[in-house]
Image 1 (tube, rainbow, N blue to C red):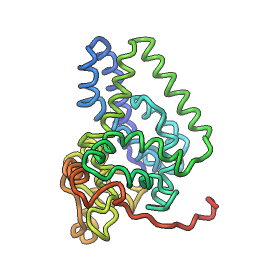
Image 2 (image 1 turned 90 degrees about the vertical axis):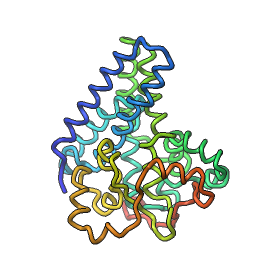
Image 3 (image 1 turned 90 degrees about the horizontal axis):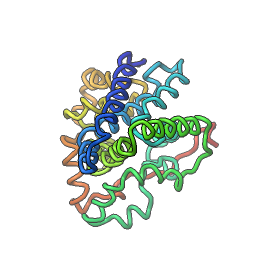
Image 4 (image 1 turned 120 degrees about the vertical axis):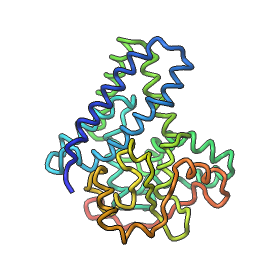
Length: 287
């Protein structure tokens, strides 16, 4: 456990890469804006969202520097185009503390989602619209008071968006936001949303994936290991699996996030209802 000394440099390089990309795409036609948003920029932005996930566990600067972690997450948020980091932190702690908790873990789809998106075509639409459900569901399921950090996150994010628009026009801003939305939907990296906790096998609630997409997602696929030890940075989760191989090697695991998306859409036994939901007793500070 402890901070990842390389994370801040990797994230800074990704932010600078996207700022350079904003300059490079400013004169492209719209079809190429969306192509590069999906094929390149969105991959970086989704990776950045997973970096923000790691930062929310204080692994950028350590548990004794929580404010540094919060502000660095706001910096990492910049290429995503929409304010995200502060709200994510606020809800993600509940995902770990109350995994599957009714009205507490906002990763759980609503009853409407489970009822309506039940055919292959509708599940395809649900996957495409996943960033909207992921972003808006908390406001319906478990609304919380807006924090000061969320206000700062939004003000800084929209200020940077305006500066990019002022310097290079609308296309770079669309490139950033479209990349974020497209790559959280029907995209190979987005398979991790479904792979992590949907019950593909009865009795198993959390799954890991050990394939090559971990290289660009801060080892987000090592999800069982992460839930067992959330304070261990992603870069060290393969070490956890190696040390405790007898606990992880024989558990069900996904071989492909693309296959996860395919099975979710076309397997009639899997859908938004394929999550374990439980009633959780609130921890004292949340009562």
